[in-house]
Length: 394
Image (cartoon, rainbow, N blue to C red; front, side):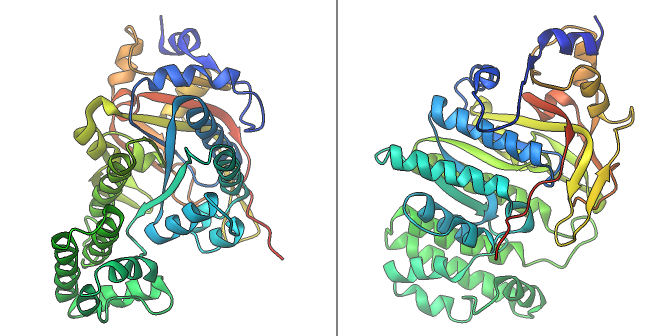
């Protein structure tokens, strides 16, 4: 049996990606997830409507039928806090997303958050939490949370708290001659909070402030210009914290370059970059408690954020794993954890998976460094994609 035939016999067909449709065709995924405490589900693009819609649909299944109660986005910690408050109460979700990175400022993400709010209103005693797990931009709310409960921390934070645009604040930190001393002050504040026995959310806020300063304390080294190795560790640390803090199952919503389990070589626009993924840290920490779910696509058009045009991604060549996946069908779920030879050889051979960091990137951008079965436990494949939809305002 060749690989394509094995996939056809093993896969569960997907009838739709529309979150409003019945979930019957998606339901086998609950069995594949099993007892995993954290599911990292990422895709090879941030610009496709069908990919986002499928991530939404998966969240609705796992929240509604498998007890998942945290959706952790790779957005900044404080923005995640604002979204969390809004889905558990009132607030302008679209307005909050205006402050998010462009890939999250979409109708598809907004639809998921509105569904979560509806779920929470129907289940006020068992709400879904929204989290941001990235330390790249930490707003003043985190500092306020700490100082409100531990006033003595204010002195350590003097000059560290952002005043105005957080991205500009991060740029100033990277250029500062005394950034190492700022890291030490953030750590001292964290140690003070820990010594005072502050609550877990206060202590985690202090820890994320430390992460922000440690992340930006680097010199743009050629081998890791964005300090991605630190990003990956921080993502994993914060995702796991949410699982421990709530005692509930967590969905980690990101790109497959972050959620897959293993070593990644190549990350647009830095093809020579090598790092361990957040997924590999979570697998190391949690073992089978972490499940890696990859969402793949073959071709189509992607949204081009900040521009009126869309980016066309051609069909993948034979060097991409997506070419093999697409030959087996248009849309399906596939559990990679078992497969007879010769499928086993394909499953365990190093592969290249498409990863398009920005929709304008060339369609050949991909990541390598692992085999399909090393990186992913389960795949969800959808053949053709169309552009994600920016939220319309005004």
